Image (cartoon, rainbow, N blue to C red; front, side):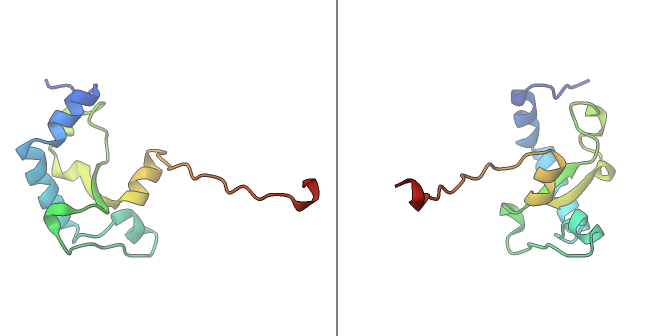
Amino acid sequence: MVEYKTKEQKLKFYKSKEWKALRREVLKRDNYECQECKRNGSVYTDEHDPEKHKRLDVDHLKEIENYPELALDIDNCEVKCVRCHNKKHNRFQKRRKKIFWDDEKW
């Protein structure tokens, strides 16, 4: 069975024809809408260019490193906006703090 433990293994998988075809199917099935936003009562959609989605991801519900047999299972995938996908994986961009000068010190 194929493993998806290393960054290189995952990258090879996500560049494969099989994944790209499945990704397109999932986007169509989920109507190019973030399913997490939808569950929370809002709709995030992006269908202007199905081949170049930068704001929508196709998420594996059960991660491929733990369930490699489900990597190409359409029922293990759903569309998420980048924000929801990052939230699921605790990937947050750190924002730089603004520094305000305290006039009293100067």
